[in-house]
Amino acid sequence: MSDSLQQHAEALQNYFGDKIQNFIHEYDEVTIDIAPADLIEVSMALRDEPNFAYEQLMDLCGVDYSQLGQVEWQTDKSSSTGFSRGVDPTTMGHLVFGDELEAQDTEALRFASVMHLISYSNNCRLRIRVFAENNDFPVVPSVTGVWSSADWYERESFDLFGILYSDHPDLRRILTDYGFVGHPFRKDFPLIGNVEMRYDPEQKRVIYEPVSIDPRVLVPRVKREDHRYLSDDQQEAAE
Image 1 (cartoon, rainbow, N blue to C red):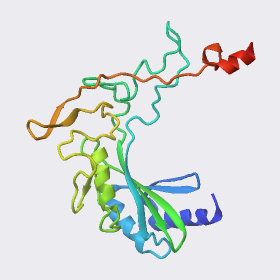
Image 2: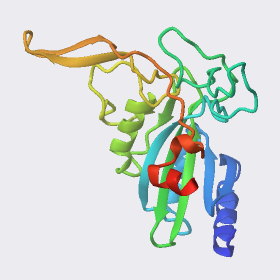
Image 3: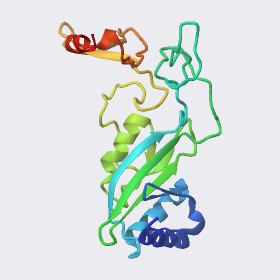
């Protein structure tokens, strides 16, 4: 960590104390975890205190940590037909209607809202992460009253992840249709979706129907260096 970043991190810890639940430094960037109850107070201090002066919120996004660390495409085991990656599903990439994954950790907080701040006067950046305290009904406070640029970002996070932002002035879908079922960036959302829509010329309106796509698993192709993959010129040179 550079000296300036170290000094900034110490200033954050000294000023906010226990309000910072977790302090992370990775890739020359600082992330602080804040409880939902303290978010507005901390955000206003980060904006107004001259030592911080985070004038602008650059980005805000939702995160679903429900399958963090799970990888189904890496294996050191082989079946009777050889190495078959992804046979045992551990993520929603393989699952279709009616399939369910075993819960990994029911007590772990699943949804988080992540904010990226910039201070032009101090030439600093900061990331704030706020975990929703209820996985079934995720709610975090809206920061639109602190940084107005959060308005559409929070609507996007609500639309794609289903995270509710309390006190948001106009929280509704922004990317998907008003009748869209589910939240497409959640890890348990099926890749083929829940419904499909099309325009019916007879009814002269858009209608929703069950998904007609056949579910399938796409296994990455492996390019092998042998004669089957050589071009004609390469094969002649090899001979």
